[in-house]
Image (cartoon, one colour):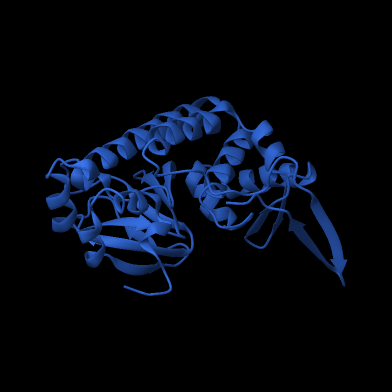
Length: 269
């Protein structure tokens, strides 16, 4: 296990460490998650579950014609591979890294042995699965009923909750594949958010300048998912959104040569 990283950066693993599941930690393997890496393809046999620490994973369905749409996002609050311990050996979805970083993986047999002990870890994973189902259902409704601008706001906020800073390294192509629209649609929607002073976008880097404004512009779907996730996982001490710009934060802009630098006061942990 790499000494520079801590499994408890993942909130599920952090909760496990207080539930007499420490024996699992000796089996964890730290793995890098580069941007755009396909973690698993549809129909593949699952051999591991993944607990992201600094990585953000997009889970989406891919249609026969190549079109795709995201149904959930997993970061340091959760685990990728719930179908394994829910009784399925494969999944019909694809998982792609949308935020580069690291994750810890655990072999199939280890997680299943612990899960079927019917102890506190099983209870924790089932609560997480319920929160994931809420996210899937709300995302489906959002994709059907809300505007592209609102969906983009939700998409960015979901990633912001799981990121370590207010800057997201994310290409328009990845966002387009997540929402299920053409790249040109994302270019237009991102341009509107930038013109409104909510974000700054340049060459695959999106910096959120006004989180409160972004939340106000988003549909209710983001708030519904966040509230339910906090209710289900916060009760067992497993999740709180990553703190970022507070509503009263000061956003300072200063020029260094021709480059615009955005500095923000962030909330304390």
